[in-house]
Structure formats: C-alpha cells, structure tokens
Image (tube, rainbow, N blue to C red):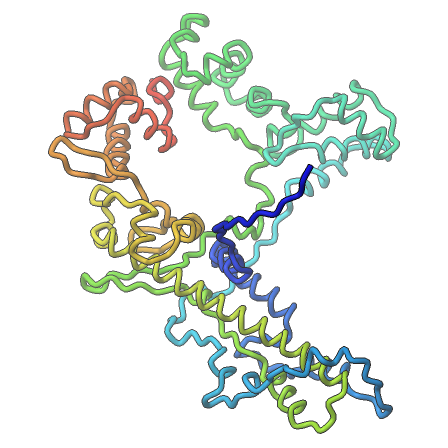
Length: 496
C-alpha cells in the first residue's frame, strides 16, 4: 500500500481560555460571585481588594524565597528564556501607567441593601434531629448502629425507599453488624414514631396514614380518612370522589371533611428541615430597575463590581528587581513568577469587567424590548422575544445571552423575575398581529383561576374560549401551556 500526503483546509472555531472563563463567570450567580472572587484572591497574591488594609506579606514572602544568597550561582543556559522579559509595563506609575488602570471602583454602583450581612440561622439538620430522638430509645450498641443506618438511609423528604435487604447487606459489609429484615423492620416501626410525623414511610400512602394514626382522637373524620386511604388511595389521589362515595355510602359533607383532614397533612416530612444557608435558597437580584417618573433606571447589583486591583507590593517588588544590578538566575525566576501572577490578576479583572458589561448590555436590551411591562407590570403587554432578538441588539452570541438569561434575576417594583421569564415565542391573532405566548399563558391562567371549581373547564372548552378572544391556538397547545404553568387537568382541579 503506497503512502501519500494530502493537504486539507478546515475552518475550525475554538474558544480561547479567556472566553471559556468569561462564559463560566457569566453563569455564576451574584450570590456566589463573592466566593469565586475570594478563591481567586487566595490563589493569586498579586490580586487584592482595594479596601484591604493588610500588609503585603505574600509579596514579602515571595521576595524572601527568591532572595539571592551571598554565594554565586553557576549559569547553566536556562536563563535565556528570561532575557527578553520586558517588565516596564508592570512598573508604570499610578498616574498614567497600565497598572493604575487595572483596578475596579464601584463608584457608579450605589450602595444597595444587598451588602448587608445575611443573618445566619442556627438550625438542627433533619439527620441530627432524628439521631437526637434515637438517643432516647433504650438500645444497645449493636441495635443503635442498625437504627443509625436506617436513619442514614432516609432520603431528603424523610422517606425510606431502600429495600430492607439492602440495609441488611450494608450493615454486614460496611459495619460488620449481622442482622435480619425482621429486626430492621421492628426498628423502622420505632423510628416512624419520631417527629416530624410521617418520617420513615416507604411511600406517600404510608406517610399520610402514619400522620393520621396520631390524630385518631380528633374525631370520626380522621378515622374515615384512614379507611379511605387504605381502601381507595388511588381513587382519592385521582379525585374520583363519586366512586368513593358510592363505595362507602358517604354524603358530600363527609367527603369534604375527609378532604380537609388529608390536605392538612405533610407529604414531605423531611423536606423543610435543615435547609440552612444554601445560596440557592435565597434569590439575590443581579439588577435593579426603578421607574423614575416614567424613566426606567437600570442599576447593576454592587456585588458584581468588586474593588479589585493589582497588588502595589508586587509592582514595587518588580521595580526593585529592575533597579538591581545583579541579574542572576534566581532574580530572573522571581521576575518571571511575579509577571505570571500580575498577568493572571490583570486577566481576571478584565473578565470581571467584561462580565459587568455583558450583563448591563443584555439587561438594557431586554428593557428596551419589554418597556411596557417594566412600566406597568402587566404580562399581557409583553412582546414576543427570543434569544436571537437580544443577541442581534447586543452583538453577543446567542449562547452568551442564554447563559445570562438562565442564571440572572432582576428586581422590579412588581417583583423579582428570572431573565428567561421575559423570553417567549410569538402567536398570531385573527387580525394577523404577533403576540407573546406569555400573554396567552396569562389569559389562560386567569381563565382557570376564575372557573367554577365544581365544574372546571376542560382543555377543549379553554381552547374555544381563547379562539373566541381571537387567539389562533390548538387544543394540544393549550394543554402544553397548562402543563408549563403547572396546572393539572380539569378532573384534578375539581372541588366539592
């Protein structure tokens, strides 16, 4: 087989490390940006916050590390890579030098309430709460380990969805504790008596029954609710109340009392315990929009504009090395190291600046497109808007706009919204006008909210009502919008 050479020309598009880092920074929520900056400050001593009043001990340590001892070093030729190193741009004066430009003031970002320290709650986690109650049982060391394994097998909602055989195997292989399914089952029964009620259930039916068993003394409605959940659980969750009434010969008042008892129960006994200080539990707006007599004013959250700058200690150290007469290997290595750190600091500050510019550019374009909404708060006046519309207005790539829209929030006088809330497809009316699907969803939601819950509107009926209003929409589209609004079908919306 003969060998041959060919020339091929390919057009490839690759992102630079800086572009990749910018994309990552764009996705970082404002609530987590401070942590990201803190990580960079810890990794790079040449970067610092402008309001820091600490001594440049890091720079002193570096200088001491590379300090040249009294004896001479033998040059081995590897110092050639430092010969062309130009450090003049790193030792410019503050008045007109490049270093002076690499600092970030947030003079243009007014002090907002977001700089106040969030109070830290002192709570006991779900696991700790159960372990504390476990200590109240009269258990020997072996049975305590078994019970502890059971508690550790509960999911975040408080359910025990693992098979008993798996728990037995875990105890045998991981803790060298021999047990059987019967003993595990007995301990589960004890744990199911812990607070919150319903904990340790294998499914929703058992969870609700455990809670009702503790309320038996509350009257006949509770006892009837227990019977219904045991015999007619599937019918109940599907709201087939007529079938339950026929099967148990119940009156409307009786089934209503049962429903009232069951809806008071907690389907997630472990769901609201121990969720402490999670950044995702708090929404920190990235933007603030104020309506000043009809003029919309956009402000970027001041957390997005940290006071970053190049360390003066590192710059002074470079000046000292430039003035030095000795140019041995150690000194050149020190200069090379410092240059790398300053490069990295300058680059990170640039990324933060680009992040700010990208956020403001994107949000400004959204405001211009949805001005009527930001003035009135009325969703029905929102215009169709897709990522491409904002990308064309800002000159940004669609993927960049998407990253901003999916991870950022804006606070208005009408509430706080995720940016992707303002994006929607278009829908034609009878007059040929293009309207936002957000407008149709709002009207659909209002229709369902105003319906007679004893006779909820079907998707077909809702479609007819929208068509009468001039919106050309199919039944399957109505069903899709209803599901996107997290609204159940008509049968599940029915109330007695």
